[in-house]
Length: 255
Image 1 (cartoon, rainbow, N blue to C red):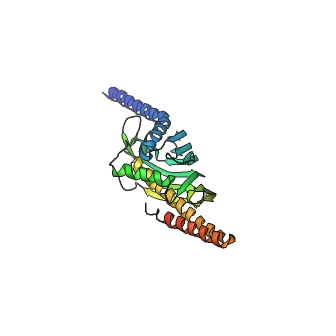
Image 2: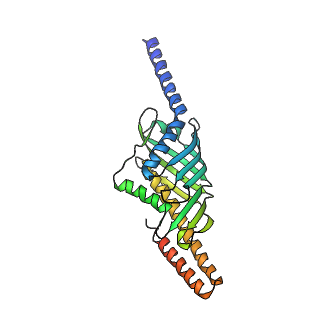
Image 3: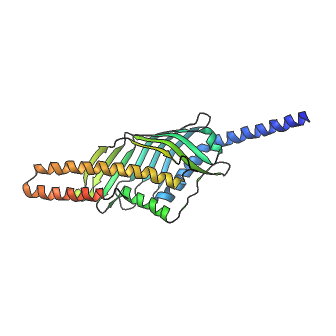
């Protein structure tokens, strides 16, 4: 009996180890496919990811080449691009119903802001995400190799060195590049059963959009001051345009 029990125990342990190895070796592709499948479903724009490299046993991951395209009607080819994001995961959570991500550090993303009072690209994507939620849309949560539905918790989400390339259509296509202050989110999905991909996308995109609009609005103030160097009539018109842009941008904060 003892010999039989040991044999069964060994077989079970081998099966568990084999299962972990299968999950570990296939997780990169699963995450990449999830991002490229659920991202467009939520945002209504194409989302591409160059690569994901996850080291399950150390709980670390690197994401490279994430590109969120612009909605139709905008000239800039993309809204957001991320060269590198470093992620720390609780490896034991991979086998649970909620994946616990300890840290996400997005390094020097490039953000394109195009538009003005009539709307802008980031606002349009945000509208798509909100509409998806209001319609009751529920994209499948992350699905791992064992086909178990997963939700997500992110304890610390940090974005540093973000650059915003601005094209203000209300100011004759005026272009500028701005640097955003760091964006720091904490306890996303903590003390709950976790967030769906749509919930997480909404939280992060809202933070990026809000920070971008604040930076653009502040920069519009500087443009208004610069109008003093123009002729009297031109300065009055330019200042009026800037005031309209600032007022319109300010109205976007609540969205």
